[in-house]
Image (cartoon, rainbow, N blue to C red; front, side, top):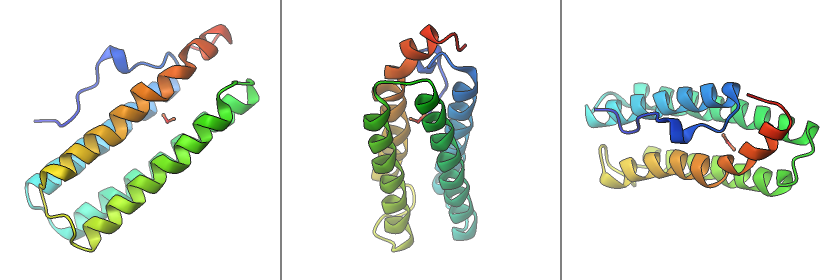
Length: 136
Ligand code: FEO
């Protein structure tokens, strides 16, 4: 069973960013499944690496469009991104240092809240701005 299911209330109103978020959700679910099935360390680390890479690409896209369209919350959102990627890196380090065991409930809680809290708590704040700018 997937850890996170996409629903319309995740939509930030910009298709390209919704698509990115769907891909990130897919990676989180893939990671969750690999951890729960006790899959090999190499596979789990590969998914973590891909998640980190795609997250960085997505953050750069959001920041670029926020900046070019004069989004008032740009600086605050950028700081939230720095914190967001740092949390992922710290979590990956904890996993690699075996401070968290496979399928630990903390792992699932982190993966879920790491993504959902950012989309719902930070990304949705730009929805009206991009709508006013004509993005869909
Ligand atoms: Fe969708 Fe602000 O990351």
